[in-house]
Image (cartoon, rainbow, N blue to C red; front, side, top):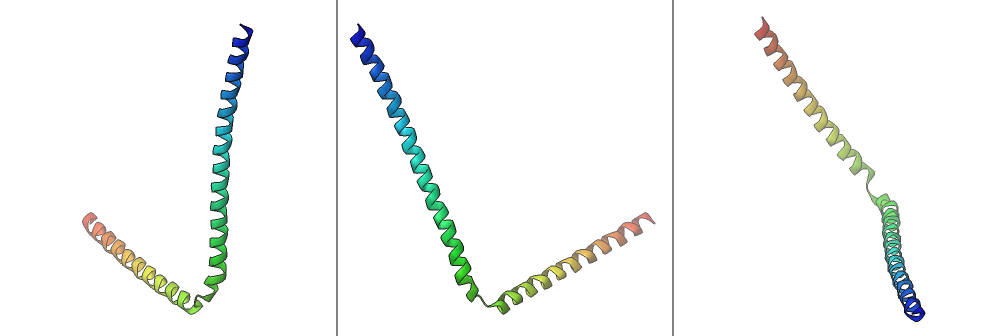
Length: 94
């Protein structure tokens, strides 16, 4: 009887240890994956840092000017539409 109990206890302990081992392996995989992602992030940042220096600053300034002009044009159009709609609204009230 005590042998059965000991065997049952041993089997339970083995099962617990196997489950714990699976959990640890899973954690190890997750840690490894996070380390790889971190390395990719760092390497990507370094590549951007060192190779983006070659980007022509005048090109960026031109793009910013174009974007600013487009934004100003859009703002003017919106303001004109608002003024026109306000004029129409006032005429309707009169």
